[in-house]
Image 1 (tube, rainbow, N blue to C red):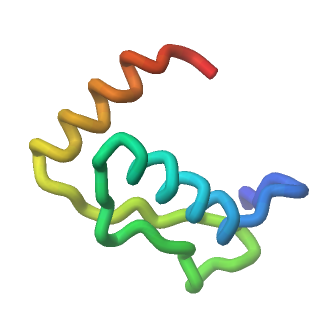
Image 2 (image 1 turned 180 degrees about the vertical axis):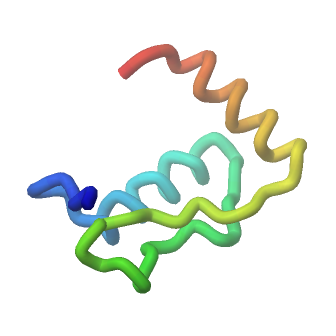
Image 3 (image 1 turned 90 degrees about the vertical axis):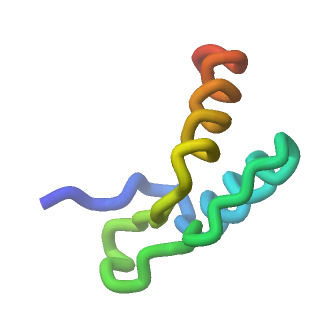
Length: 66
């Protein structure tokens, strides 16, 4: 069974992602920590419109690998 990565807080990760997306004008209304499985440390990205998914993909492509 998968477990969360040690030292990575799901709440901090979600807020970090929300902040980064806001800086480039992208809003994911369903972005939240998955409270149903706290031991996994999952961040729920939720559903988005196709135009938002396209903008997100373009932003990631421009940024390149981490």
